[in-house]
Image (cartoon, rainbow, N blue to C red):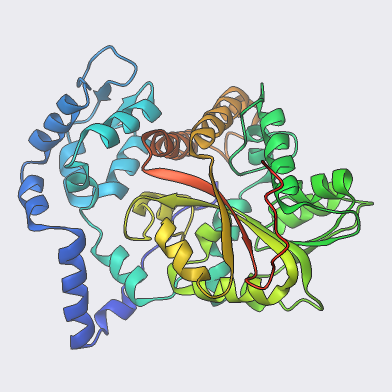
Length: 413
């Protein structure tokens, strides 16, 4: 199994100037108030109170009750916070039958959960605050660490089109139907016409481009930072007017503007320091009468930081924007015409992925995807599902045009 950890470098931290250290201290005081320090001194009692508020019983028989198998859990989490909580789950210190519901109950019934999960964030926060984590070679980290781990894994988990984003379940009966409905919804919002040229920033395995080319007669160009995704996409899109480019958006220069642009859950890898740059490029690459469909996960948190465990094991250098950051990034460049939430749909999508992965796990290479990987993947899918279920996370389809485009009409009503 390939490594899924992203190590935090301390080289820059030790060379901080006095002014940077002062700023870092102020920053840490904002994200970890003094009341949390007091709570952390009694972490087991704090956790027990949190569980009680959420109707969770230690050792109980309900699906969302927590089972603790190693009492060292409390010291480990007190020292490492969110990362230690996930790692102790991977190491079987604790378990829950319905992990997504466990997360949902905690996030909707407690005010002190951050007291546990925020511990140990200093280096992580300093790195995100003082470094641009998503430019240069770092832009390819998520491709290597996540999307390149094996197409066999994603084939076991995803729908037949290999769509790794929130589906649309309104009138769907299964995952394949829900993903097709989502792709068609995007095409209709963009009002795709035969012969138009579309750019897909973060194209994945090419599922959207294949669907749009086959059903709407358009030409597509896709950007990806994953070699495995491109290899798979080129194979399934043979004979279609679809091309793939292994390149980060920051290094891409198109020959001419596109009729429409889509970016379906790639914005989470852009980073808050680069949101404005991203939107400037989209505006520059888009025809004056074109439209841009952005589908992105958002958080209710005021900070764009992602969960440290997810950063280390799943999506290195990822950051989740909030709605205000999205609005700020497009100001003066693009007009927002529509916000459409798919948060509830993402909960259902993640649970469908989990059911596929769990039922087909036995067919995967057990050396490559060992039991620790299995628990890591289960934790990833379930904590995200719980986050969408609680409303802490959301996912939006956002339709945008240039301010000069006065012909736009909402085709989805």
